[in-house]
Amino acid sequence: MTLESREALASLQDIADVEKRTREAMFYSGCSMIFILWGVLVACGYGLSFWHPGWTRIGWLVISIVGCVLTALIVAMRLRSRPGEARDWRIISAMVALMIYGAGWSWVLGPVIPRHLIYAFQPSLVMLGMVLAGFWVGRFFVALGLVGLALILIGETQSEPWLRLWMAVAQSGTLIVGGLWLRRIGLAR
Amino acid sequence: MSGNDVIHQAIRLRIMAALNALGSRTASIEFTRLRSLVGATDGNLGAHIETLEKAGYIVIDKRFEDRKPQTRVRMSPAGRRAFAEHVAYLREIIDSSQSEQ
Image (cartoon, rainbow over all chains, first blue to last red; front, side):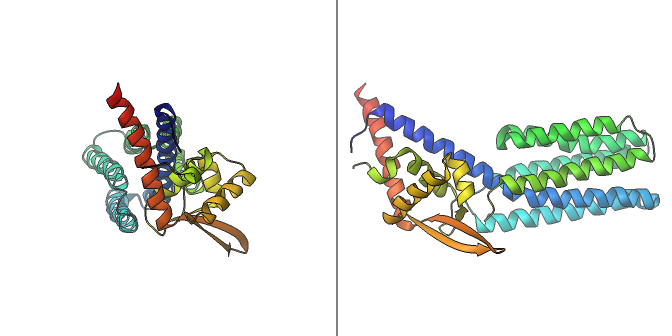
């Protein structure tokens, strides 16, 4: 078999395209569990702050720590089953760093600035992170982040008690639906 | 070094690229997912994976999951070697044409 360089180049390009799509799909399925986990945790956080307002600050702190530990465990398990996939760790570490950054500022500014701004600040930071991550890992994340940001902005127009309820449904809903959709379009083992 | 006629066909090349990107030796992919990744029809993909299986490059595993029939495909060690050799051949063509210019 003999090929011209133009044909060889086209074949290599084809291979690179398929490999990129395959890795993207694998990454999507890996993220689905993390999205669902955070969706459930965020719903718990809002539920706690609604029914037990006195526990809000400590509750969110515990939820953030539990979320980070479980996320690290999920990523570690994935890396063990697929040692070559280093991308998981870097992108998700960046997202967790963003969450910790947001949580830190929310903790400091919580008593000073209006409550509704705190409800919008951290989740909008996470959604922005998702949009930015999407530029590297796939359009789905850009779309999901933008939907989340739009829902947070709409929530800002609500007043209590609907504000908290809206944020709970919008954020955990975005994360859980996103996670289920990622599972659907990703490559499960 | 020479190219591989079995692998070089466009759809089969994509199938091998997708399976190779899965990484580990035991990683497999479900038929419908593979179909969407390589952009083939059911019949087309079925015929091509059969060709690759006959060549010993892939392994087809048919089973039932939740009472539904499922076909999973994975690359064999021979397939991985053949694919790597074919990619090396393609790169060699490009390198030699660049050195001629």
